[in-house]
Amino acid sequence: MTWKQVFISSVGKKLVMGLTGIFLILFLIVHAGLNACIWANDGGEMFLHAAHFMGGNWVPRILEIGLFVGFILHIYQGYLLTVENRKKRSVGYAVAYSDGSKWYSRSMGLLGTLILLFLIMHMSHFWFPNRSNQGFLLGPEINLYEKMKTEFSVLWVVIVYVIGCISLAYHLAHGFQSAFKTLGVHNKKYNKMLVSIGYGFSVIVPLVFAMMPISFYFKWIQ
Amino acid sequence: MEHYHMNLNLKVWRQKNNQSKGEFKLYRVENISSEMSFLEMFDVLNEQLIRDGEDPVTFDHDCREGICGACSMYINGKPHGPWQANTTCQLHMRAFKDGDTIVVEPWRANAFPVIKDLMVDRSAFDRIIQAGGYISVNTGNAVDGNALPIEKDKADSSFAAAMCIGCGACVAACKNSSAMLFLSAKVSHLALLPQGAPERKTRVMNMVAQMDKEGFGACTNTGACEATCPKEISISNIARLNQEYLMASLTAE
Image (cartoon, rainbow over all chains, first blue to last red; front, side):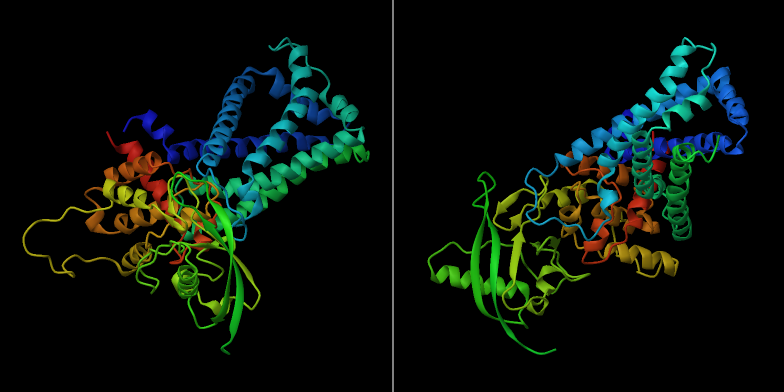
């Protein structure tokens, strides 16, 4: 069996989703951890140090390319799977079967789209202005702490960010445990553990992210 | 439980053949006993239709004991109807009450084309089995069943997977029309036993390839299949199948 045959099979496509999903989950931990520096409440000093390392050093900048590849594969394969799977039932049911599965496990395409829309807005707030200011290399960065303060002083922006985080929470509630099942974890004790960690992760991490715009809006941090 | 009689309204999918466009037809059946099975209620409807000079409703059935996997109705939005771990033939009319309207549809998946009314072509499952759901045995006299020691837990897990009757309810329930629960039961059943070891890698690769060829969707682990399965096949079999496939793809030539 060639690698191509593996990755175009239905199980292989899911493997790509699972592997990139776990990679993006790891990214979320790094992102949430670094951004949590805003709560040092030191006028952004610690946060700007961290931001400078991530934006002004070659190593994270090269890793960033890997991150983009992960995002693109996950998004592309996700849409491909959603569209292909839909085509497998030309005539739908008059009465839908909704008791057997959670709504968010059936709505990964929709939740992913909401996250993608949020991601475009989020990057246009921070990533694009910062990188274009740097000439997309290691040039001078903008003050991201001040930028956060400005963006998150607008109520509708804060609301959209919170909606983005809720979409992420439900996406993770299914995605986290599903990714490990796709990788073949069928051992009962590990599965039980991963399901619990998955629910915990899908609440805690999006909550940490949502608290960032909220903290700025209510001026809990200066 | 008290015995009672009921009058019911049925909304049944009628489709002449694979080429024609089907539609729902409304029927009324009266004086149905709560002790009848769902298929017996359909027998009553069909006798009524024959008396009226109409075409009776075509549906699959064989043993009517819940073990053959032939019956296949999607009743009120769930394959095999409202009861858990149950086939349509074992669904009894005490699950309904007088005046109920029951919507009956065929399994809907492009890989299971409608032959007529509620009967669908499930031969895709047979071709998946042919692709690898077998073991090699030596010719000559049959080997004693106890000659090969097998750990009790493994034998039990294998047997639990082998409970699959191939009815296709998992495909009907899945939003992706995926056959992964069926396939995973068949792969797990043999992967857990020493008898399945010789073809272990080729089995999973060939069966997955055949499943894709038949036009079933990809699994997204929603769990609808497990919830509706009349034989309560565990979704953990799907994770085992994924592992079998991953290991085979990493190590096969």
